[in-house]
Image (cartoon, rainbow, N blue to C red; front, side, top):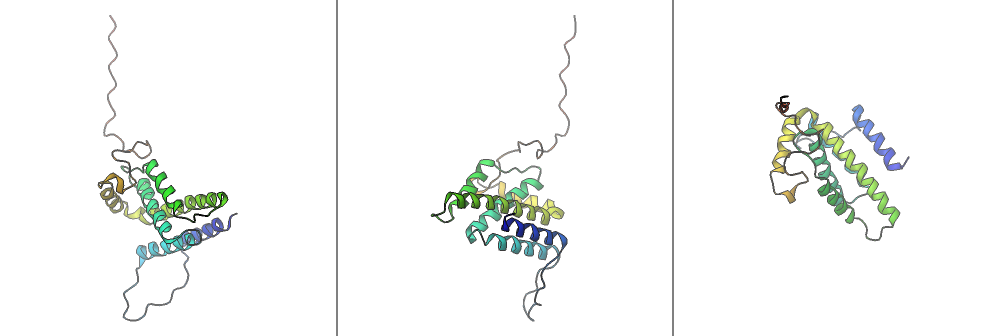
Length: 180
C-alpha cells in the first residue's frame, strides 16, 4: 500500500475512534481552546492538512479543502450539486500549481493524491457537519447565490436523481382515450 494512503487510513481510523495526541495545557491568560465539536473539527483539519503537506504546498491544500467543502455540501444538501466541469477545472488548476519540472509519473501520483485528499477533506466535512446539516446547507446556499464563477455549484436545480428533492405530488397520469 502506498505510504501516504496507509498513513491516511491510520489517521482516519484514529479520528473515528476518538483518539488524539496529548496536548499541552493552555497557558494562563490565553484564549480558550475550542471544545467539543469545534475542537474535533480543528483537529481533523490539522490532520488532513498535515498529511497533505507532504504532497502539496499551502495554496494547493487550501484549494483542495475548498473543493472538499463543495463536495460535502453537495452530499449533505439535497438542493445543491457540484458542477463537474467547474470541479474538473479546479482540480487541473490546483495541479498546475505543482512543480513545473515534474515527470509524467510524478504528475499521475499528484493527481491520485489530490483525488484521495479531496475525498478525505469532503468526508471530514460531511462527518463534522452531519449534526448541524441545516446551518451548513444554509451557508452553502448563500455561496450558490453568488456569481457562477465564484462557486463550484450547478446553477439551478440538481440534475442527479439521488440529490434532487422529491416532488410534492406525483404528476397525474394522462387519461386513456375512450373506446368508440
